[in-house]
Image 1 (cartoon, helix red, strand yellow):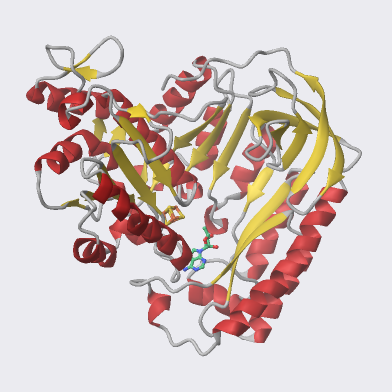
Image 2 (cartoon, rainbow, N blue to C red; image 1 turned 90 degrees about the horizontal axis):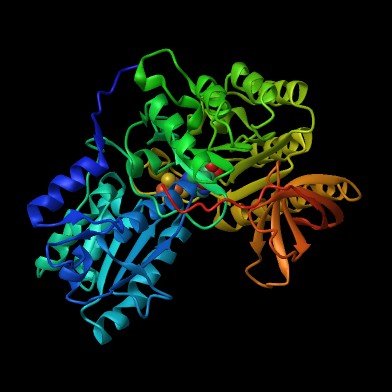
Length: 499
Ligand code: 5AD
Ligand code: SF4
């Protein structure tokens, strides 16, 4: 494997130097202020207490990126607005993985045109995976002049200087990089409330699945140094966090680019040594790089949750080859059997694409057959969506859209029944859970997660948010379980806000 020598840069050191040039220094309240005590944001906007809003589409990597955007905004002195109508800066962090995700984000850009007419001083920025695609940049230039700032995934850690340019320039400021010039450490993440935290371990993807836009939107694979990851997890534990999710487009290829013979199994084992972290999760996995040793490490450490998300994409060897997945159906099944043997009670979930170009009824049946054979606890199922710039988007595709749609419905019917069956089998048992807090729909109901990442709805218990406990599972649906909290662990929620 070719080694990429990407320099490691400290966000704090780089930003302090930039801010010093602008006449700002980090004050005791963690905000960059000038000699007169005005925050950087106040000087940029001309308002004493400007507010911000960040909207996020897409995967956990994007959510983690949005926490980094909010963390930078906070350091500049922006508050968090309650809804974008009141925000002085709005950032849209977009996803490009399928056409629908892209349309949602561009729809929002269109909707905000009115707000910009009513409040021209609002700064509107668009970033994320979609802006890494040249056609999006061309579209925004031509059709969305009300967007002030366009930047990408590879320079989202440069927000202070991007904003200075965007506020100064009359025209739309566009700055998108195809690759990341550096791996940036100690970004100030404004993490969501609770005891769970995302931790990036590897950025980018080198797998080049033929349907996938991610290598374009996220660049080459770059692993963070093991010591930096472990130090961040230690800081999180000290700040009161109890669950970490190690993030990457393909966490299983972690370390390959570092050339030190240290891989994801080693990282998992080292993170499991950190005191205070009770649950460790990781996403997303690529079956091709999921080594038997990684399964052994999961089996050996009770902190690492027994949930394996193993995106299979198809059950047909022909389609897997066309997709450039690098494993066969038999190799995938071997991995599943290895997991089942070593980690009893493990939950196995997957991602599946139907209607890949030239997928025949027989190919599709091979997928249905694999789904029945594995008995996935859950699956995210998608209809193939051509993405400009990917190889598969150029291929002839005789499969009519209605056939693809029917295949998706047929697959869903099988998988939904299977998901429900798995959940029903748990009714009457008790499960260790982490209580999250009030559900979005009903404050009288709290959400909780099992180690296997199942959602459990429980009657609200005061003070339970952010605590581990045991839930008795009383009823099952396809996506959720219902239950009651039987016991809560003694530990009171930490006070996580740092990091
Ligand atoms: N069309 C449909 N689904 C896709 N995915 C990725 N690219 C596409 C595409 N072009 C799905 C894969 C992946 C998940 C995150 O999104 O199943 O695992
Ligand atoms: Fe969407 Fe993929 Fe980007 Fe995540 S990495 S935001 S899923 S395009």
